[in-house]
Length: 175
Length: 195
Ligand SMILES: Cc1ncc(C[n+]2csc(CCOP(=O)(O)OP(=O)(O)O)c2C)c(N)n1
Image (cartoon, rainbow over all chains, first blue to last red; front, side):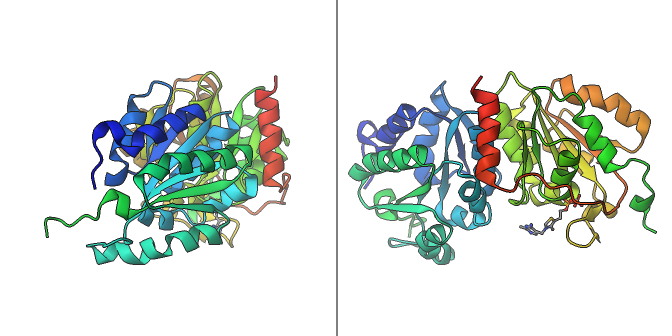
């Protein structure tokens, strides 16, 4: 399930973010985002902002947009639960909001604590007016992020790309 | 009478002075009373007054400060609003934006919702928390002399700075800014980016 480094989906996603002039990359880390975080962190055109909780990222990117910069927010699906009220900020003000969510609690999840929020993730996002793109294959992630970014930045819109646990590989803690 | 009902500093006066001759200062205000105080000081395009998103003000200031490193950014918010987003203090301190100052109007109450006490009415010390989060400078301001000394620092000293301004707990007339978030955003961007 692990792709070789050269073909990893994060290369394409990083290129899409560059093309769309994304300058602030905010995240609470998830293992599924590890490669993308490294690539964005090395990119001199991007400022990586580590958050203590995912909702901070929505406020950060609202401020970034006020100041003329575009951003992206990376999180795992449990982080969507931390964001709910803050999603109103993007919606009410029309701040473009692009979220890339690595899914847990979804495809063969080993940890039951991840399942309730993972299962609720698309519904919670849609309920708050966020456009949801679901991806199942590594090869379609780049083009999906591209499609989402166009709608977000031409919108403004709030959109989330959900990256399936099927792509990421279910964690097993060696079991 | 609780102690904050006797504090000498009055929030409308404090905010009027924070925003006096604001020029191109970029301002974000926290929901509720801080937004009304800023509007009482004069509605302006380069102030973004929040009407919701409790806990967002400081992080919006960070996003703005990172996007506009040549401009001074000031966040004015309430103690209740700041307490809802305390992690922001750590996220901001790590980025270390030199152009960002945060001023909390600490009335030790949730003013909008019936003046219930916040944790700062008890042992909780926001300035100490900012220092603990990694802010290079943070202080409480209780009186006129300390305020007068802080005002020029808020405008020009390298940040990130955090001032917790102890203000009298008082209910004041509402002075409301425009409520349309998209309008507030667009006018801010037009004033900042279009010239
Ligand atoms: C998530 C959320 N919880 C609760 C509220 C209700 N609420 C609105 S304003 C406010 C109090 C804000 O207090 P503070 O920031 O101290 O400002 P003050 O009015 O005291 O100056 C609260 C609790 C809300 N708007 N959002």
